[in-house]
Each structure stands twice: as C-alpha cells, then as structure tokens.
Figure 1: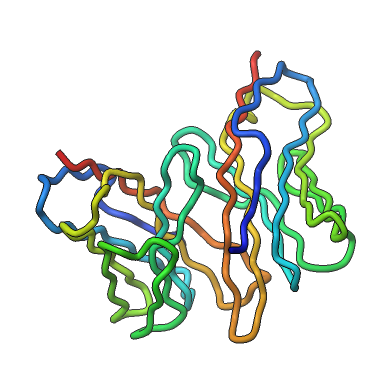
Figure 2 (figure 1 turned 90 degrees about the vertical axis):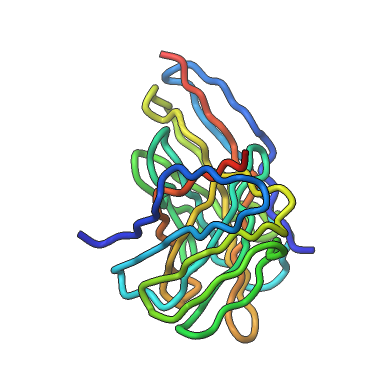
Length: 115
Length: 113
C-alpha cells in the first residue's frame, strides 16, 4: 500500500534552533506534496505545497521544503524556530492517477519549542 | 466569511447509539472528506465525495455512513457497528484539482461512554 512516513513523532527544540522534519512517500507516479500545521486549539491549515517547478518551496512563517524526487522526500525546514512554532506538523501527498487523485497523510510530528 | 463548520465541538454518546456529525462548507468546493485523527496515526480517510450524490469509501469506512445530498453539506453517521468510535473527527473540502490543498473544519471530538 502507498504510504507517507514522517520519521520523527516528537521533536523538542530550544528557540533559535534549526528544524528539519523528514517526510518520505512511496508512490512512484505523479505527486503533489503538502505540509499542514495544526497549532494548539486551531484548525489544520496549509503551511506550503509543491506541485511543479522549483523543488524548493517557501511557505508561511519562514518555513520551506525541498522536493527530492530521487529520494521520494519532501522535508520541511526552518532555520530558526520560535516558541510559536509549537504545533503538530503533517506531511501529505496527493497521488495523481487516472480518474483523479488520492490524498495520503503522514502520522504527524509534534514539535515543542522551549522558550 | 468562507470556511467549514462542524458541529458539535464535543459529543458524547452511549455505546450502541448511532450519532451524526455535521459538516457544512461555503467555499463552493466540489470535494469533501471525513477523516479520523488518533494520536500517533495521523489522519485516516473515512469517506470522501467528489461531487453531489456520489461518495466513496476511504481506508477505514467500516461502521460509518455518509450522504451528499447538497454541495455544501456532508454529514457523517457513526453507527453502533464502529468498534472504536471515540476519536477526533475532521471534515475537509477542496476543489477537484490535485494541485489544491484541503481546507479543514475545527473538528468534533466524539466520546463513547
């Protein structure tokens, strides 16, 4: 079965530390890639997405992600985290096939940033 | 104000009872989705609908049912056949393009007593 793997379930960082959250998927066809974020008490919302062009995409709040097709990866990065980045982060993949697409979510990574 | 509303926010039910969770969107999206979110398991797709009067089972449809009689509404019924119904339920909608993201509601936390 197709899957999306997020390598870290829990990450604890101090403010100003750099962040990298891993995401790998298993689908060999055309994909569109997303990172969503769920801040405490808030709706799940889009952080950034990739569907074509420059494999390095920038999102809100200083986040970026790099699509590496050969590695089936779409890792999320931020050079310097803030306490307000404490949230749960989900990688998602739209697997495009004949007749439409299917969205698969990863299990999520809980990030806690210490002030 | 465009968005997705889910009601109620918290729901309690006794074992053996069916319960219906509401989801409404005013984004004019064709596609709507129901997910179940459990700690450490991410979002698992229960049912989805790409157009009115049509819906498909997701990965964990057993014990659930849906209807899509109107574009803006996609209610989910958790039946007594669902063995482990206590969970956080999220509704989402999107356009039919794979390029576009899903928009999520605030969720309903269902607890079966």
